[in-house]
Image (tube, rainbow, N blue to C red; front, side, top):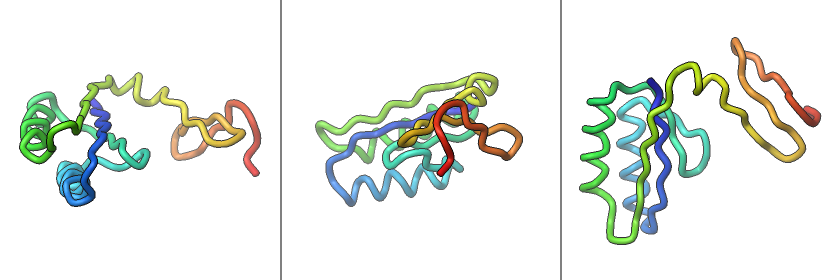
Length: 98
């Protein structure tokens, strides 16, 4: 399964530690504060436990499990374009690729 992790962390030093930990688990950034990658449920739970020791008061981290077939249907939205990735190619659903 895939796990999508989104975070809202105030302090730069804590945010950097979180990013480093997510990279160590093989997750890749899909936005400035959103990472995704393949993890088992048990590894995701261990990761979340480690994240809970890093974050401060008022910070938040959300981990969302996503089935492989659903993750592959994810749409990306950029200015003037909606697209998805299929077999290594970007497929434009709406808009232009300029």
